[in-house]
Length: 421
Image (cartoon, rainbow, N blue to C red; front, side, top):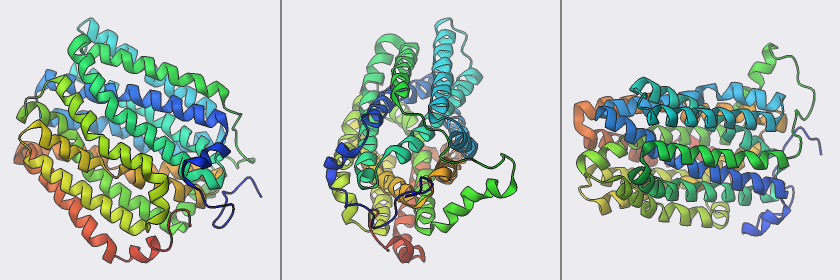
């Protein structure tokens, strides 16, 4: 088999749950655990920065602007993917994590000495998120190159399961950390987690380009990744649907802290508890995903994701106590892991290895490139309609997408086979 392509349909046995992980290199599993530790620390950042911005401004619009800036680095992912395909994956991982680590330390020091204005918090959100996004993109390339085809769903399932654990457990601890040590303590905890993630990088094998790459500015080499994504019609269609969902999800996410504090009057520890309890359903589905995903047609999995998430958004818009907000957040995020596993596995199967980092960059731009706009619109809509009205608008868009998808022309493309078919 040429090293320039991924294994195609029909090659190798069908993955069988978590047992397929035994076929993967130990260095890859160490990287996934390190990534989970880094994501665990990032949960502190996701609560600490919005908490700080609310303390500084009390404004939903300011929260929306800060979340928007944290997603702007997504637009540079095709270039980051290009560097990852052309250079060492380990080098891209190291630089990305060092940028994130330095940003977190500087933010904590500025806050400690009471010199952290709003513009610096926004700039810190941009830089720290950019480092984290770059590290995630390089990790995806490492997964694609090091994972045998029969183990892809299991590896993607492990990555998403670890991510879900960190996403939902870490805000609970972050809430207690903010209450006990302040925002600067939460930022330093995030920095420590990022530092731990650097360790597994040295264990990885050398992963340079899989073959000589043409000159950087050659015209057809610039368009080749996009052409490869367009040819993989099922991958492109699923990516667009995921991007539509991400747009509405981010609009709601940008307003969650505002709802928790302004309407529900929750303390930082209580916000953490809400996130922890809400994560039970997403974490359970992430654990079951390697057994569930191969048995569901992709079009129906995506449709169900939109329906369930949209329902949760409606519940959050109407919530007036902590337990209804908990149910809402659990529904909003419930099927994130299965959808992420499906899209990743489809791309790993269909995209040539030498283009994978660049294609993942384009996928991420499609999935998340409009999120800064979504965050800004959410903040503006909250000013005009109230936070509940803005969340209801996002819920309507999400539910409509779930209803339309099974009857759209994409159904035939997405219904062709399960992701490992």
